[in-house]
Length: 57
Image (cartoon, rainbow, N blue to C red; front, side):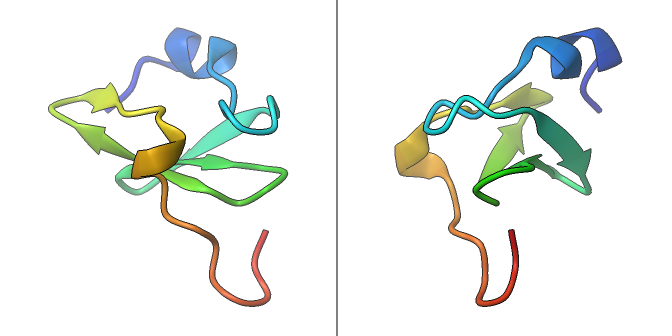
């Protein structure tokens, strides 16, 4: 689990929007990219992000 204070300061590296925590991913609220969390650390790299599915974002 990610610390709530850390989540407050994280932003999507692509569009600079806020993110939210959902299951085992950090998700951008604007573009919908999903960033993985590995060993409790969010991997905020655009190259590691999953794109949103059709109709999401």
